[in-house]
Amino acid sequence: MLRDYGPREKGNSRDLHEARYTLESPERVRSILESRTDYLLAGHFNAESYLEFFYPYEVVTFVREPIERIMSSFEYARRKRGYSGNLEDFVSAHGRINLQSQQILPLSTEHLGFIGITDKFEQSINLLNQMYGIRLKTQYSNSNPKRKLRQKYKITDSQRALIQQYNQQDREVYERANMLMAIRKKYLDLDVAPIYGSYIINNGNISGRAYQAWNNQALSLTLSMNGEPVATTLANQFSPLPYKCKQPRKGYIGFEFTIEPDRLNGNKIEIYETFSQQPLMNYGTST
Image (cartoon, rainbow, N blue to C red; front, top):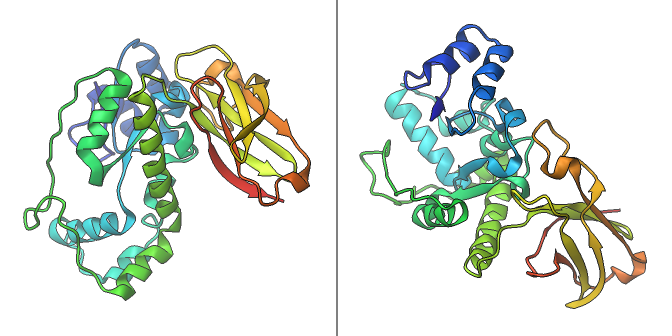
């Protein structure tokens, strides 16, 4: 296993630490990673730092409920780092605003291989094991010694509003992660591999991307309206993910449906993989 927990951490892999932080040599980092065939890379870093070496479905991360994460970081900074400022200054500081969503950029939640929830840690680890055929065990460390496990922070309404104000994107990521976890669990229990991707509705055009991990076949997708299937297509258009990574199916994962715009009004639109009926997530509507 390779480790990168930041420039000041002693637990990093020595050669990777030297290449990235001492020599600041992307070429050396590339050489280290490309010289290995089977490896895990763990740590605290932005997804973009190493994304070019992985398929998006090989990326695993955990997110935490935003208010609990901020309060935990605030207490840790006061306990371990000697921070003496107030909560407002801490929350609004550059580098702490929407930290979780910033760290997974440029990936979206729907393209991450796995996104777990720290307040559902045991369920998340079980699901991770189920998805990847591994046997990780739950372990708790680096917790606040003055607090019980899963004990929530007591804060005022004004403090809650303050944290929400600066972490709306993190809130959206957290909520989507919970929805994805429920979908993944449902279909894995049916022995159906996860579908990755999403779609957007723009007037009468519905477009997106869809694929499965380690599957080079184009997925068949069905468009339904109010629960009734109305069209089927293949996710085989050239539409690579808009960031530097290993591209599933070499970028041929796009799809498109076209319907009359007035048929969208008041109707429930869904897209799912035709055979398993596993749904794709709607990433929004634009006009």
